Length: 466
Image (cartoon, rainbow, N blue to C red; front, side, top):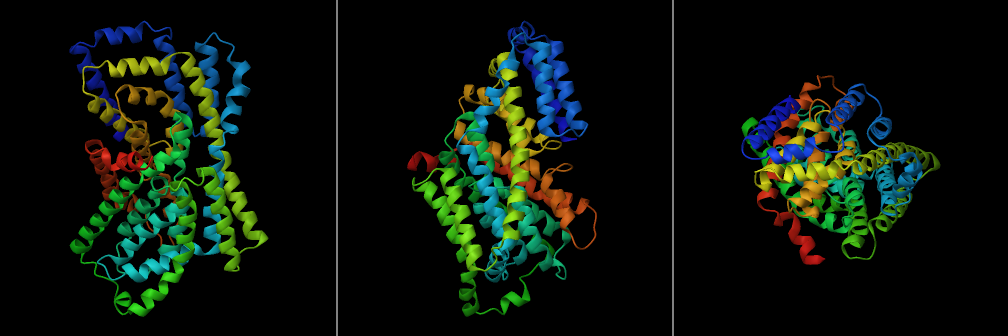
C-alpha cells in the first residue's frame, strides 16, 4: 500500500514539475543514449525477479547481464573479474564477518542473558519496566553486535520468557523488541555504515560518530512511547523489582561488566583513533572469546556453530554486494546515475522536497525489499543526486541507516518481524507484531524529520572530534 501511494505521489510531483517549467529536463531524459523502453524493461525485470523470490545476489547478477547485453555495446564481460575483485579485497569489508562473529560468540556464551537480567533489575520499577528493559538491552547489545537481525534474535530469545506470565500486552512486547532490535544497525558498529562507507568512500569513523546523537534521540523517543502506553494501559512497575534492594542492584552491575568491556574495546579504540573499524572488530572477537573462556562457555562446538552462522550471513552479504557492484558498473557506463541526478536536481523544487521524495522512495522500497539489498542497489544511483543537492554524505549515511531500520520492521516484509514471530512460545497471529511495531515505526519517521530540520544532531560530534 505504501509503495502504491508513493508511486502516485511521485507521478503527481513529476507531472506538476513538467507544468512549471521542467520540459527541458524531460527532453534530456528522452534524448539519452539509453532508450526509454530499455529502462522500462530493466525495471520490469527488477520487479519480476524480486517478486519471483529469486535470491537477491542472483537477481542482481542476472539483471546486470540483461542490461549489459541489451543496452550496452561495451565488452563489459572483460571486466567482471576486476569488478568483483575490488570489493572482495577491501580491508574495511573484513570487519563485517568479524562483527557478526563477535555477536554469535556473545549469544552462545550467555553474555546477552546476563545483560538483560542486570538491566531489568534497574529498570523494572519504571512504568512498563520490562518494555524499557527491551529497548535499553537491545541498544546496549547493538553496540557490539552490528546487526538488527542478530540483535532482535538474541534479545528476543532472552526476553520473551520473561513475559509469558506477565500482564504486558503481546503487541507491545513484540513491538518494543522489534524496535529495539532494529537499533542494531543504527548504533555503532552497525554493518550498514560499513557498506555505505565502502560504496560512497565516506569515513566509517565519521559515520559512527555521527550516529551517536541520532541513536540517543531514537532511544529517548522510544522511551517516551513506552511511557505513554504504560500510563494509558496502567502498566505499573513490576512488583518483584520494587522489592529489590540497593545492595542487589549494585551487585547486578557485575553482569554488565563483560558487555561494557567489549563496548569499550570496540568503540573506544575507534573513537580514540587507535584502531580502524576492522582492527577494532578483530579486537572485539578476541575479547568475546576471552570472556567466553572466563565463563567456561568456550568449546569447539560453540566455535563451530558461531563460525557456521557467521559464514552463512557473510556469504549472503557478499553475493549481494558483488551483484550490486556488477549492476552499478553497467548502469554507470550507460550514464543512468548522472542522468537521474541531472533530472532530479533540475526540478523546480527546493532540495528538501527532493529529499523527502527520496525518503519516500526508501519507505516504499522497504515494504517489500530487504534493508541491506536496498542500500547496496540504490545508493550508487541516488548518492550523486544527494551530493548535488548539497547534503552532507555523513548526514545522508545516518538517514539511510535509519531508513534501513524502518525497512527491517516494515510490514509486510520486515525481516525482524518474522524473526520475532518465529520465536514466540505462545501462539498468536503475526498481526500482533505488525500492529505492535507501528508506533515505533512512526517514531523512526519523526526522528528522520527532526534530523532534516536539525542536521547538527548528527554532524556536530564528527565535526568537533575529526
